[in-house]
Amino acid sequence: MAKVPLFKRLTPAELARVAKVADEIDLPKGKVLTSQGKRAHEFFVLLNGTADVRRDTRLLPPLGPGDFLGEIALVTDCTGRRRDHASPARVLVLTASAFRDVMHDFPAIQTKVLDAVASRLSRTAL
Image 1 (spheres, rainbow, N blue to C red):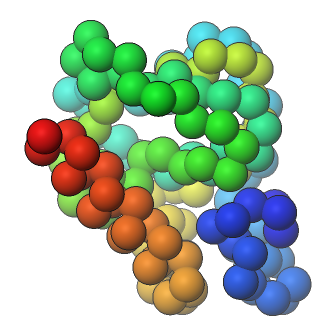
Image 2: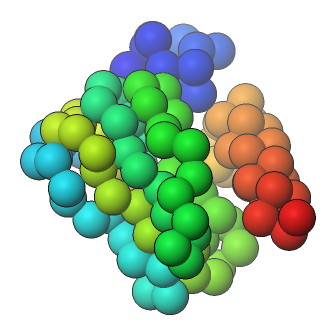
């Protein structure tokens, strides 16, 4: 977890606090994390493996280790894109409540997540 760019600025004690509210799980190939039009309830950080992301029928660039997803739906309280795993993957999962707590307690993470939200939303507006 310490190697993930999102968590790089955290101290060992802070990493332990994030780890306490997150679950680390293995996902099989093809596992659908969320579907477009449905409300998201979780935030995912890819520890290894890749994830395909689709908007409508368009395939977006794949996500890889260190990338995260689910933040747009949780930050904006709207439904998001469809996300499929392209390969088996290990992910860190935070519930919506744990995500809000981490965003509140760790400004460095909040800044990175909000920068990603702004970037991703501006790309989808094009």
